[in-house]
Amino acid sequence: MSTHVLAVGEALVDVVRRPDGSSAEHPGGSLANVALTLGRLGRDVRLATWLGRDARGDAVRGWLDESDVAVVPGSDGADRTSVAQATLDATGAATYDFDLEWRVPDGAATDADTLAVHTGSIAAVLAPGSEDVRRLLDAARATSTISYDPNARPALMGEADDVRPRVEDLVALSDVVKVSDEDLAWLVPGTDPLEVARAWQRSGPAVVVVTFGGDGATAVTAAGEVAVASRPVDVVDTVGAGDSFMGALLDGLWTEGLLGGARREELRAIDTATVRRVLERCAAVAAVTVSRAGANPPRSAELAPTP
Image 1 (cartoon, rainbow, N blue to C red):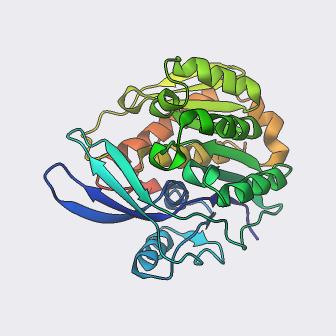
Image 2 (cartoon, helix red, strand yellow; image 1 turned 30 degrees about the vertical axis):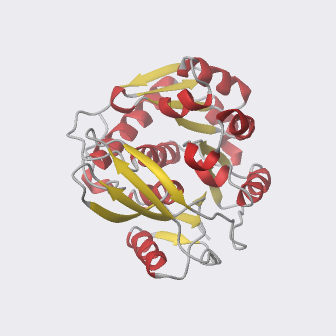
């Protein structure tokens, strides 16, 4: 066995509809995109997901395999592969509708070599799989860093008031949280995103990062707050941008030797220079992703060294 990250959650097909009426299908799904980013950055990553044994499932599995993502055994038990309809506006921003079923496969498990377990989005709140996700995180916490991205999908998640307690429970359980300002505007409307991030960081996580799209990202830690700018780029679409940022965040913390349950106190004591170094690379990864269609994060060779 080798050290690895386990991502737990949805893999699906994005049917992207553009303003000009054209459409195209791309494999995707929030947790699949995070795993894909890690695989392309050269990391050992496994994905516990829920796919059908159909043509779309084959396309997703092939896409993951090309980026060295290992799919956990038992992840092919769905009646059909889930679909997300992503409708793009004139700026490239996406809104989503879903045909989705989610369960945790029986083969999902962690061991002493699982440096981190990442989950979020639909998988963390959609029953019946969400209860299994919570139990898996509880079991993994002793040996693994827990990371979480709420990645809100109101069309499936329901009312924010109903979802917020579940999100805050998972935040408090986690070591690393990444959330977008749009997610926070839905979860806690009318509240400064950084005020929410500060409260979340005090509840348990070592690092809470808020992403602001084209306006960069800010991390909240015990050592202080660090803001970085987005990289200037011509945006094709934003599909997978936040997920690629999340994957790069885990990759950066891995590079810094801060993943794993045994490193929890070191992660809690992370200094601002380290945070900035990690976030700059996250910004670079996300910039490449938005510069091309679909969830298509870069490989390491496509990235310039971080200054």
